[in-house]
Length: 281
Image (cartoon, helix red, strand yellow):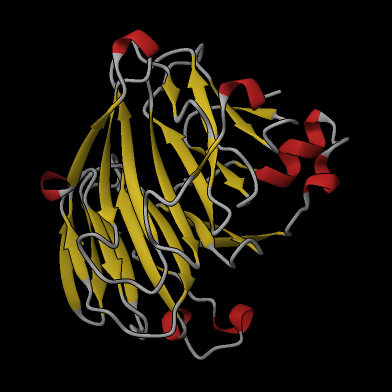
C-alpha cells in the first residue's frame, strides 16, 4: 500500500490576485485522488478539512494519521464522511462490517479507532471519496444509502442548470459536529451548477467532479472574489478547494456530477450570501 497526504495552506484574496494558471492549479486543484491500492489525501488549513480517495484492490486499506495529527488514532478528534463512487465494496468500523454499493454514503463519528476499506472485485474496485473534519462530540455512525438520500430538485432547462442535490450528511436529518456532505447530479443538456453564484463566509467547501468520463469533456470551476473571478479546468475525478470568501460555481462541456463537502461554524445549508450577476467580473 502506498499512502500520501499533501498539505494545502490558507490563502487571502490578495494572495491569489496575480497567480498564474499554474500557480492557481498548484494551490487549489487536487489530482490523482483514486490510485489503485492507494490512499491519497489532502490536508487543507481551510477549517482543517482532510479529503481524498481510498481505492482498495487486493488488500484492505486503513487511514492512519496518528503521527501527522498528533493523536493516538485518526478519528480520535475527528468525524468522517464518505461516498463510494466505484464498484461494490465495504467498510468495517471497529469490527462492524457494512456493504457499500455505488453511491452509498456513510457517516462515522468521532472516536472510532479502525475504519477498514475493501473492494469486492479488484477488477471493478470501490472508490471511496472521504472527508474528515475536526470534531468535539461523538455522534452515532449512520449508513447513508443512495436510495434514501434526501433529494432536492433545482434549476431548469432554460438556464441549463437542471439538477438534483442529494443531501447525505445534513443538519436537517442528522447531527454532526460540523461536516456536511452531498452529491449533485446535472441532467443531460444542463451544464451550470450554482449560478447565480454565492459565497458562504461561515463555511469552506470542496468540490470533487466526476461522471463525465470522455477525454474531450471538461469542467470549468470558478473561484475567487466575485469581482475578481478566476477559473480552473478539471478532468474527471479531480477536486477543488474553495475558501469561504470565494465564489464556487462551475460549468461543463457536458452534464456531470460532483460531491460537495462543507465545514465551518454554521451548519445551516441555506446560509448563503448571494452574488448579483452584475457584480461578477
